[in-house]
Length: 308
Image (cartoon, rainbow, N blue to C red):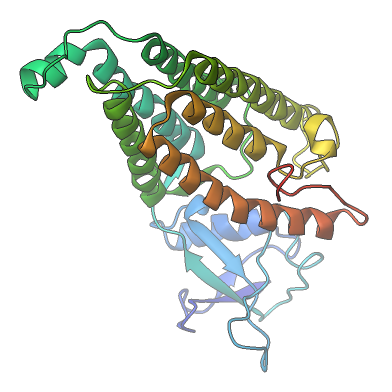
């Protein structure tokens, strides 16, 4: 079977077409294209069907799913056209996650352990040598534990649906996590930092700890859905997923709410607001996807009980 491969602008990319076996899958197509165009390794490729003539503006072509038969699943036959998109240089998901999560610890801890040197010797602030407060110690422990948990989950728990992501995401995500961690630590460990009441501090850290454990349970449960080695997407029905579509996101948000109740940092509240804003849209998209995949799917909340 010979297929014509074009760019999104309609330019033919392989002179004379690309030949694949009649029973070829999307993976076989990617391997053949990589052989013809060595620059575009398989994880950098994305193929779709052409947009039908007369389709509404902004209509996207149907993607060719990994592992699916080109002829049986996507209806392609000899002489048909597929559209190629270059996803750009890629980097493994695990590498991105490890960089995202190790960085915040390295950015947060110096302001705690080298407080005198940073605030006093470097910045010339008064009070840099005074003893650290209990809330500053607990904030360091909770913050470090959160990212250490994420690193362990990346290594031992998470199973990624996609092997790679665009390398640009590595710099974007690291800038986000590392930058916020440094700014949060700067203000929380500042010599002029004013703590909240002990009751508020303990309540905040308690909420944060419970939510962290809830988030870990969500991730372990999600991993168990693929414990049989299957890559097929399964409906999450257990634990908090009985009530919340994105229970893992909910726990993540409440974990940072608790942390900020305890530490009362303006930069911390800004961090959780940015994260919750992004997760809100992810939750809506995931809810729609689950409703499409599993008829009758219904949850009381998409993201944040008792609000959304």
